[in-house]
Image (cartoon, rainbow, N blue to C red):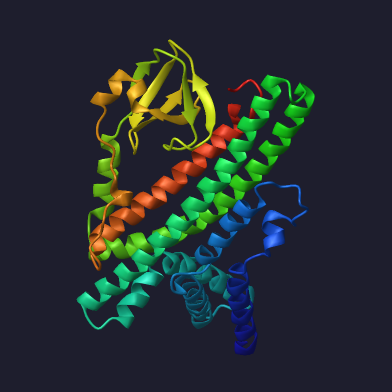
Length: 340
């Protein structure tokens, strides 16, 4: 019986390890056939995902294996046999994996630290590294989306000037939309990995700096959207940056909502759900908007867990929002020929 149980545990252990395996680059983004003008930016984004595919500390894997052992041993100790022992091990693996994923990182750091000060320093160091990597991913995603939407902007301009026939322009935009949607799926996968790691960080953050996440969320709620009516035609940009490509435009008298963004820009959302950025100066009402939280760019004292945690939470939220916004544009008018 115990021999069979050991085989079961070995299978479960292998399953846990295999679940962490990462596919090849070709499997994730396809082989390079030379037809993608944005291939370099796509490879750059994919490369940043390697960091987030790894556990911070192997908490989830250890938790799942420990849970399998515990669940199986409990079933065996209670006199159950065969499939009941297997079921106990499986349930334990699921429970252990959930607990390990949520708290494995913090528990491991606790065991490695000699006191609270060294624990705080270790978590602060991990958060600082995580923030740097999220910045790399955000930059890579921005550059990839700039390439995609910039290409769409050029196709529309060529169609409007007659340099490109309408059927050919529509075919190119359809192909570009499909590529962009695949890019967004990759970004969503990376974002899921960031979120999973963020769950582990949140457990640690709440333990060493209670209330930090609530404080960040409260600051985000202050930056509420305000309904306004456009007074003129205003192009909307992909990002709050004058060099970012235009992705849509709003027309005079169109009802939109405004939310303050960084760099003198406002986040504009149309009634149909299209979102983009425009200079806040284009809307007189923007001067009355609540100040946007700028936690992502706040300077954190080295070793300051609370500040690093706040900027980490903000970075995660910002990346999620940028991916969601790109997804809405890809599904909507971001690749429509009529968009100017």
